[in-house]
Every structure is written in structure tokens, then in C-alpha cells.
Image (tube, rainbow, N blue to C red; front, side):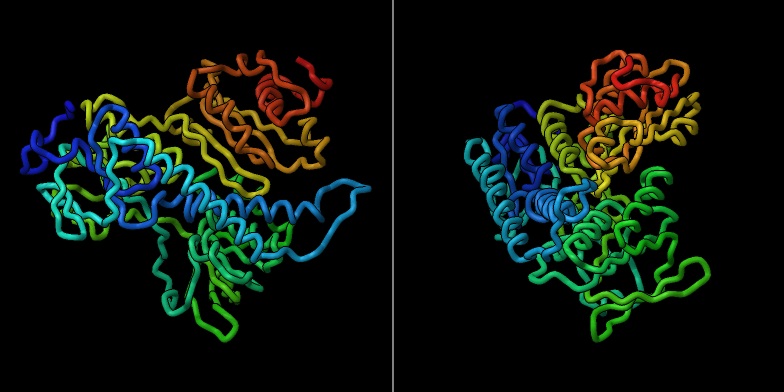
Amino acid sequence: MSTGDGGGGTHDHRSAEFDLAVIGAGSAGFAAAIHASGLGARVALIEGGVLGGTCVNVGCVPSKTLLRAAHAHHQRTYHGFDGVATATELPDWCAIKSAKDELVSHLRTAKYESVLRAHHGIELIDQHGRLEREGVRLADGRLLTAAQIIIASGATPAAPAIPGLHSVAYLDSTSAMALEAIPESLVVIGGSAVGLELAQMFFRLGVEVTILEAQPTLLPSESAAVGRALADYLRSEGISVHTGVRIGRVESVADGARVVFTEGSVEHAVTGSQLLVATGRNPNTAGLNLVAAGVKLGSRGAVVVDEFLRTSRPDVFAAGDVTGGPMFVYVAAHAGTLAAENALRGPQRRLDLSALPRVTFTDPAVASVGQSAADAESAGINVAISTLSLEHVPRALAARDTRGFISLVANADTRRIIGSQILAADAGEMIMEPALAIRFGLTIDDLVATFHPYLTLSEGIKLAAQTFDRDVATLSCCAG
């Protein structure tokens, strides 16, 4: 097997046991191992924990099925249709959690364990490993040698330095979804995607919820308009939302945890029977001996990589959450594939995130892609913006759910679409059209000229494109 240029270790690559060693068997590691095997490489996949990583075990899969269960329960009462009976029975958390665990187990087997058995060029090594100059040192003391190595060890929930926090038994995203009983009340520190998704999920299952966010708006990575609108929708459901706060301290009390915070110039306190801390994730690099083995680390311990996913050591690449980039499973899988190809065939393919869609699975959901108007203007682009309320989308009217809006950002000189933000019940399903438009250089006129089925939410993309030049309120249904 011909490999890329090495030189970072001291062993002879020609006599190495494997062409590629991958540390971590989550989405990035699996994608790297499978792609490398397809290229004919001998691959060692090293994982001392649970197979499958964050997404299938404690991230995307369990959270999204719980969110869907909470949504189904919520719609039994709040569906917007006259003449349709409502129901108010309390949900069965134990049954919901059991179904979630069953789904996770099934997908771990179907998408990881069974898939691995189908690729005979991959050897799974059920041990932890640490990087050394000569190779990977396994937990049993054995030194495994490989011509190229990929670090794909993922990330874990982080907690900020709040006075008193470590004196209480707080939850993170993993333990919150594993609770044996649903709490009476929940305080959530963190108003980004994970915190908001879990906050709304618990609220819809009958929990009193308070959200505390340090930034001026929810979802600080999105536009302020999105953050403010989403906060209003969450408040309208009954969730207590506080933004622009400073957390002073956390105290253990008889009935849970008490959080003291300042909002404006006024000090407040809120008590919850459970406290959830959802303030981001840290790369899993502790204990891997990376710095001593010649791999540079950056902020929060992330592995520093270039556009080809090479580290500071020529024979070591890294992919997925451990690099500190966008922590999405589809980014990790794509990066794992690129890292394997670049490691084995030489650095040729760059990681391009210019048309990366992002989704927050609240209700309404938030989805975005490309540049915001502010970012584009900062880059010197002459920007045109269109914003369409869902009140002008026939599908939303028929569904009795006009919450949200569609925003498109275009280069005013070329009329090419360069960004989009959507706040809508199915924003995640709608964002792919703007993503493809950005990926392939489509214009406002291309979107307008494309057939969009009537009474679909995707028709809103065409209407938003028409809004650049026309007032869609003056158009009849299906008007071209």
C-alpha cells in the first residue's frame, strides 16, 4: 500500500504492522477506517470505549428521538386546529426513555458493529491507545506501528468555571438523557443548540424550565433576529428565558440546585430540582500524549490541523470534534474520509465548509448556511437581503403554524445566493436548497425560475427569492 509522506515517527514505515491506525471509533474514525479499507489499506481501529462515539450513543440519535416524542405529546394539546380534540395526560418518561435506549442499541449494532464486520481490512482493537513517536501505545503495553495515524477521539461536554458548580450534582447532555425519573423543574445554563433542544424537550414533557444564557440572544452563533424570535416563541410556550445574564454562583439546596445570576443590574436566583449545564464541548485529547509525541494543540486542547487535516507531525492527521471545528456528525464523517485519503495518497483534498448547513432542532427549528449579511458586508460584499415571514407561505397557513421566517442573503452585484437563515418548524428540511444554491453558484433568478410544488414549505424558498424584487403579498397563489 502506497502511503503519504511520513517522517513524524522513528519506526520504518515499510515494516509497520498497519498502513493506517485510527484512534477513536466514532463517526470520524469509522468513516476514516472504512474509506481507508476501500483504498486497500490495512487499518487498525483503536477504541477503548463504546463503539460509535457521541452521535449514536449520547448525541444526535437519542436527543432527536426524545425531541420527537416530546413534540408528539405537545401536539396532542397544541395543534392549532378547531374541532380536533386535545388530550392532556402526562407522558410516560420510562417508556419514552426505554424506546430511546432500544433505538440507540439497534443503530449501534446495525450501523457500526455489523458494518465493521463487512470490512475485512479493518482490525478493531478494543483498548485505549496513546500516541508515541514510534506508534500507538495500547493499554496492555503493546506498541502498535502504522505508516499513518489519524486522531479521531471526539469531544465531551464542558463545564464553565462557575463558583460552587462542582459542589452540586449537575447534569450534562449525556446524563440528562439517562435520567431514571423526569424532574419537577430544570435550570439550564447555556442557550445554544444542545441546551435549547433539551430545555424544550423537558418542558414539553411536563417539567418547569428556566434557561440562562450569558450572551445577549439565544443561539449566539446565529443572527440576533433569530435568537430574539426563538426566545419569544419559547416564552410563549411557558419556558422562562433569560439572556445577557452573568452567573454568580451555584448552591446546593435541599430541593436541588440554586443558581444566583445577575440580569441587567438586578440579582436574581432560581432553583431547580435538576441543573443542566450545556455550555459546549471540549476535545478529547487528555491522556493521549499528543504534545509529547509532536502534535500541536490549540485552544481548549483541540488538535491543530491545516486545510488537509494534517497536524504538526507529518504522519499524523486528525478529524472530527477533536479538531475543535463544527461539531456535527456529518462534518466528522466527511472529515474522516478526507483525512484517510490525504494520509494514504498525499494531501490533495481540502476540507471546505463554505456551504455547511447547520440545524438546531427546537420547534420552530433554526437552520442556516453560508454567510450572514454582517459577515458578507465585513468581507466587502455588496449585500442584498430578503426576509419572508411564514405568514406568506401557503403551507404554513394550511398547517396553522406561521411561526418564523426565511431569510436569503445574496451578492447584489452577481445575484448569487451566499447565505440563508430559516426559522420554521421544518427548517432543517428546507435549508438544503440554499445550501445547494451556494455550493453550485445559483442566483436569485435560478431559484425563482425553478418549479416548487405548491403547498410545500420549500415553496417558501422561491417566495423568499421573489421577495428580493417584488412584494409577494401582491401575488396570487402559485404566481410565477
